[in-house]
Structure formats: C-alpha cells, structure tokens
Length: 337
Ligand code: RIB
Ligand code: CA
Image (tube, rainbow, N blue to C red; front, side, top):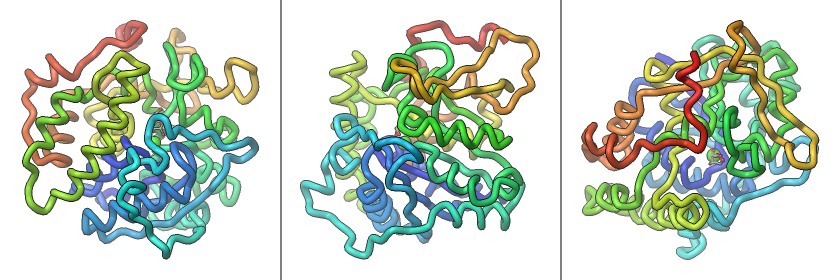
C-alpha cells in the first residue's frame, strides 16, 4: 500500500481534492500539512480541521509556513473567499480554537525517512513547507518516492502573472530551492488541469439531494464551489470551475491515467513581469532532466471516479466529453511528443 502525505493551502479546489483523497481506499493518507497560499495558514488549517470533522476522517493535521521563504505572502480571497471556502465558515461562525502553529517541515522529513520510496508527497499549494523540509534534510527528502506538485504552466497563459501559475507565483524561491537541491518533482501544470472543467450545471445536478450523511458537506460545497465558479465566470468566461487539485491527487494515486515527459525545469525568481514563470524546453528530444511534466491524462476515468467518490454520483463518458472537456488557449503540446 502506498503512503500519501498531502500539503495543502485549502482552498475550494483543495477541499474537493481532500474529500476525493479521503475516499480513495487504495492509498493510506498519513498526514495533512497546511501552508499559506489561497488564504493564510490559520484559515487553511481551520478548513482542514473542519473537513476532518465532517468526513469523520481519522487523520493528523499539522500546520506549517505562514509566509513564503523570502517574500511577502500573496493570497487569493477573490477566488476562494476570505476563509478559503467561499465564506461558508465565516458566515456560520465555524472556528476551531485548538488551532496552533505546527511543525510541518520536520514532519515531512520524518515521513520521508519512515516510508522512503513508498511515500508520495502531494503538494497542492506553494512549496514553502517542502522547501523548508529540504533545507532540514535534503537527502531524506530525495529518498521519498515522488513529489507531485500542482503547479506551473509551460505552454500558455498563467492564472496569476501573465505566464505564471498561482502556487509557483506565491513562492518561486521555494520551488527553485527544491529543484536546485536535486529533488525531482512531478508537475501537474495548468496546461493539463485546464483541459477539464466542472460546469456549474453539472455541479448543481451532482449535489442535488445528497445522501443524509453528506448533507453538511454538501452545504459547504454548494457555497464554496458557487463562489469559486462566480470568480471563473467573471474572469475566465467559464461558468463552472477547474479541478486543479483533485486532478493532482489523481496523478498521485492513479498515475496510470497520466502521461509524463521528463524535462529540465527552471523557475524565474525575479523579473518585473515574469516572476514565478516555470520554464521547460519541450521541443528538445532529449527528455532527461530534473523533473517530469504531466502532459495528458484520461480525463474521463478521472471525472467518473471523482464524481463517484466526492458526490456519490455516476457521470457518463458522454457527459464528460460534451460538458467537461475543453480546449486551452494554446494547442496541447502532447501532439509533439
Ligand atoms: O493555480 C491553481 C492552484 O492555485 C490550485 O492549487 C489552487 O488551489 C491554488 O492553490
Ligand atoms: Ca491549492
């Protein structure tokens, strides 16, 4: 059985990803660590504790970095709400007083030492905690099986800077530090995650009349996902939302659905217009490098599995094809492989 550790900046799509992971019985999720990103780490941790309660999930939660390694924190309340879940917790006054500052980075190192090649670290936010762990013990972190990172964009427009993706944009020095210490990363970039969306209409039908024991989590999801979809409608001409983080969890737990190519990746850490840009030369035939990039995936298998686990509903292949698959601004680069 593979062991999974999830580092998150929850976040609406992180919330969906955590529900998905919690109901994936073919892996052991060992620990959830939190990091500032979509919202400050205090809010992130509260979201994760709330999910743990709603899902009756027997899992340890450990908070981590509250600021990036060497720059000011940028958050995205306009995308995820002030509390990270579309203001659902804020509206209902849901807080956890036993929240305290934790030691995510040493816990990551301990997990890497304990599970070695059997450990997959799934990083759904900025890489601050991962970089802090590498700073503590690079050799131990190198010994982990995989680090799967939702992040980067390699052939088109970003969602934060013109050409940068949010997670890398928030703490580019962290990703740069991890790569420059010889740690390989499996990137799941926007190029891939934006090939699929969950349209608002589909989400509304999937969450209509939930099972009795899913009633509260469905209320949370309805508020959070509608908020997130409103943002996408206003900015991306998309009436629905992207599933960046659930797809990244799938890349960790069902890697056979994904095709990766090896590449050397660099991260721009300065630049007035390009800070946080991920750079990889995918034209080159020699594909050895410091990392891999997910370039295509079986979106239908993912979406069916995701809908069944998160909403306990079936989605047909025809629905995925006609309602969820989309073109990106640039043609997919998978045709050039
Ligand atoms: O760019 C998308 C990523 O940034 C997702 O992980 C989202 O939750 C935010 O962290
Ligand atoms: Ca995230």
